[in-house]
Image 1 (cartoon, one colour):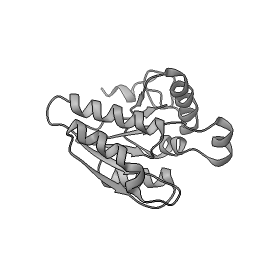
Image 2: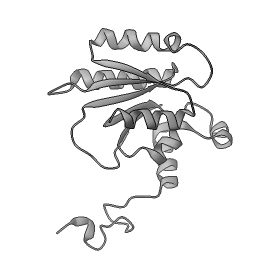
Image 3: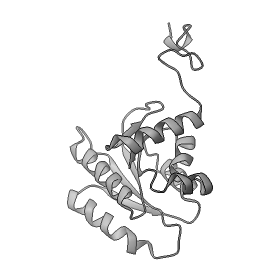
Image 4: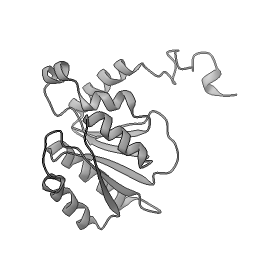
Length: 173
């Protein structure tokens, strides 16, 4: 039978299939991402082939690491290469070309199929909406780029996406 229906293996049991609530997932994931020194892949549920990889990019060093991880993953992919969707996130005013230039040059050097999506709004909501509209199977992003105090006071894009994104998420600190 279905392992999730067996006692001790359901979502609320402490068995192998335990799924913590979002606040616990966020705090545990945050601790792991901050201390790992490597990208961390969070996979709530696998949904099949990876055809599109969304990369949330704001020009920060963490988003540069997320871009590098996504490009390397796509370049090494066996079978049809996933397409890259570069999601430009810039909370303050400014032309998208200014901060996306380095990312576009990086992707061009890999010779990867890609396109850009940008838009106004809250970064967490924007990333989630644009990545979903592109049907991205994997979202790569910089994570926890601000101090714990700032995140506690103002909120965190990473925490927003841990709570709302339902597909694979690669976090780079």
